[in-house]
Length: 192
Image 1 (cartoon, one colour):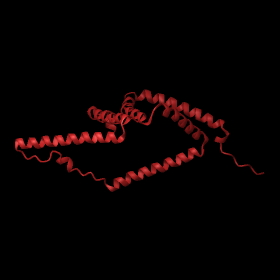
Image 2: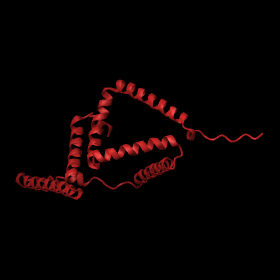
Image 3: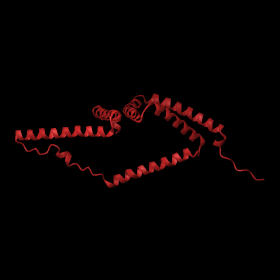
Image 4: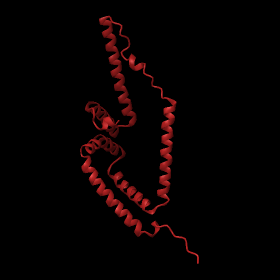
């Protein structure tokens, strides 16, 4: 996957990027069922035409090459149970961590973190007003295939600027936590 998004082989990356973007743009204008049906119909048309072509070619040349998709038909496509369990365990662990974090944020365990979360949610309302979900997915795919390469090319400058931004955010967060009485834990009263 990393080789694709870093464009190590431009031909493969271009094919994957173009096909993914084509499907997503199709989904932006047509329903999922229509897109899946058209892609499947196009694939079936290609494979049937190729099979007929190879059969006619074998008949004309009097060869017995066999089925043109024999190698593909012999590939084992069954999912190994241990791999499925491994992926499911990771998914469950991530879901549990997400639920715990959301509980912590919504129930204001740390007021500064909850306020940051509120700002993110408020920002998402504007993002949702500007773009629909499919547009965001398309932007995400374009970013996935462009930002890693841009970062790889300009790593030092980007890292320097990100360090400055992180330092400023840490400074602001520290000031906010120091200024908020709810951010400090209550000290037990001293008995005399």
